Length: 199
Length: 199
Ligand SMILES: [Zn+2]
Ligand SMILES: [Zn+2]
Image (cartoon, rainbow over all chains, first blue to last red):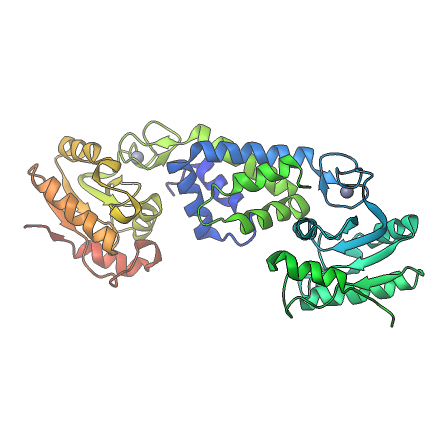
């Protein structure tokens, strides 16, 4: 075929992006080469720099450029509360409510057997250790989707078996709703109305 | 906010991809950093390499790693025919029909006033020069979309004014159809049934 190898390689490489099939990858490659070479170079550089510089915070497990992230090392947070969220974007949403001043633990995922994500794929040992060190209340703020709920249920059982107090943010969110897409007020209310997980 | 700067930079840089908004960019960044760092590095490298190595073929205007691409420099093609297509993917489709052995000219776009693409944004001077040098028949194989048809009409007028013989591939394609999505047989038929553009 008449496709230069570096173009073929680029189209193939773009397919590592989630939701990008062969046709979109081709369209993206043409667009970058034809209309936005500076953008392509900026993207190349950002990818390299992000892979090189980002790690998981030793405390909250979110992405961080330092061993311990800015939030975890601030010293101004209430360490009697540990809020568990699925993704870094959920942590940002919590912060935007400005009603929560505790610590976080980011699962970087959720239990999702259909996608092959089971308990051992999540950093649950680290979560338990962190909750025990801090001897705090754990607030489960996973999404109110089927997977998020299953994850919350699983975590509640696991943490309570260790004698850790566990609560779940209130179902102020619509069923099937995701933290990322809810307004700050609703989310703030859900945090205030959290209830202890007992059974 | 609690987003490390290299993560923010990556999310921002991903938005140079067509059709990628802030939420998709975030999802892509998380996915790469969490699940596919090798893919991210491969993409970074491919972007750099494609931008560095690819240029437009001096003859057909398609992407090429050489001054003149493999197809244009093959010496085995019929240079009494010059087929004009919108994009490199369309050239590949034409080649797959195995019924066309002439040369190509790739517009790298189409007239599309609504997207701000007007005649001077397409390499029409080069197309005319090329058609005159080769003193050939120009076969217009732009898509049968509104933009593709308008482009064909514009090119026909322009080229015929220079005394160049112009034909249009037959409307064997469904109205609104794109070359990329048609089967080889239909496209081959459309080439065979091309008709000269007279008025
Ligand atoms: Zn942290
Ligand atoms: Zn060429």
